[in-house]
Image (cartoon, rainbow, N blue to C red; front, side, top):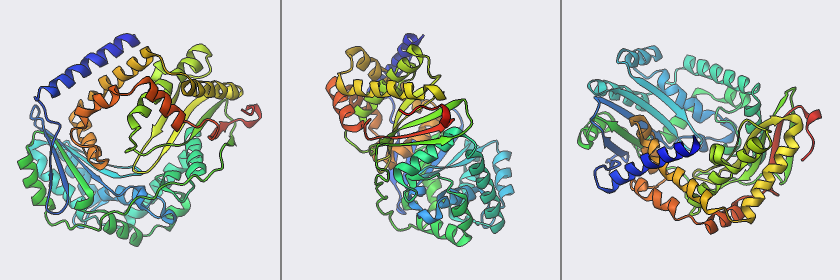
Amino acid sequence: MRRLLLRVVFLTGLSFWAFLSLGHAALAEREVLPNGMTLLVTSRPTLPMVVVQVLIDAGSLREPAAKAGLANLTAELLTRGTTTRSALAISQAIDFRGGELSTEVERDYVTVSLRLLKKDLDAGLELLADLLQHPRFAPEEITRQRQETLGVLQKAEEEPDEIAEATFRQLLFGSQHPYGRRIEGTPETLRSIGREDILRFYQENYGPNRSIMAFVGDITLAEARTKVERFWGGWRPVSPPPEPPAPSLQATLPLRRIIDKPLSQATVLFGHLGIRRDNPDYYAVTVMNHILGGGGFGSRLLQKLREEHGLVYGAYSQFQSGKVPHLFWVRLETRNRAVKQALELTMQEIRRIQGTPVSPEELKAAKAYLVGSFPFRMDTNRELATLLPLLEFYQLGLDYVDRYPALIEQVSQADVLRVAQKYLHPDRSLLVVVGKEAEIEGP
């Protein structure tokens, strides 16, 4: 089954790359407007529908530690009312047209997404422009959103994986860095955030010159430009963003932390600092990690821990990367009494990939999957509208999809060995376990 899936992924991906190479498709057209907004447009007129995605450099990287959760609270309130519309009016306007409107907050950025039929696009864009340029931040909506977020935080305290991740981040990065805390903040910081904090954060971080707007669907660049100039032409630029704060290691590694909970299964996180997205070794690291633990059932970790020893249902490794170095971790769940064995086997696999070149067959399979599966990230209008602003935000270029196969294919066995030795640090790692401490043997 896995061979069949890999073959389908590879052949489908191959046909997509061949289609691009013949010049039949351009990923997007790009233009920077006079107010500094970057406009990206991919015309797909097959269906009379348009997806719009706006990415704003206003993630939690931009908030002060004392006001953790401010970026999230600000973004969530965008759809809770403007100076001329109530939250109910906004919801009804979208529902009446059968559209979708959503916000999402990441540590590096915020996104606002809109999907509508082409005939309703002007009405939708006028609404979207109102949200981004004239949010009301009504006191009653702030109170309501704060209570909802406090509920999310309370629920997270009952989830082992949430507890493990929050502890891991706090120990690794410290609560002063945005990567070291929850995007939602803490109950204490949330309660300290007032309307003046939200308004100040919005005024400092929301502007056209810090926004990337992507259109995908039944629309041309000329149409999109006209509409954006009409609805956003008066949006005034804000100060350019400062360099995001680089994380500094807060824990003295190695460090082991067990959080005692009456659970039969332990949640385990094991890792350390990672790399930036613009690291030249990013693609070699991607291939290496796919072989180690990022490749699902074909990865070494899952083969060892599940197929050979029956210790886990799932386990994976991951490098998270951003504007600043993020993290590497291995995540798994296993019986409390099996934690020690699972960690020992994990360490064996990390040292094996550091000590011996991967086989030609493993390297070939990893490359085939990574290249072949990449086009599925652009399979729908929504997926492409999500991808385009990220390519711009991380300065990867609109030719990235043309370059990506070669960037992966150039990775050699020696490269995999080199980056495993350089970026994996099993002896200088942080271990967080959430489980029944009395049953967990020390690794």
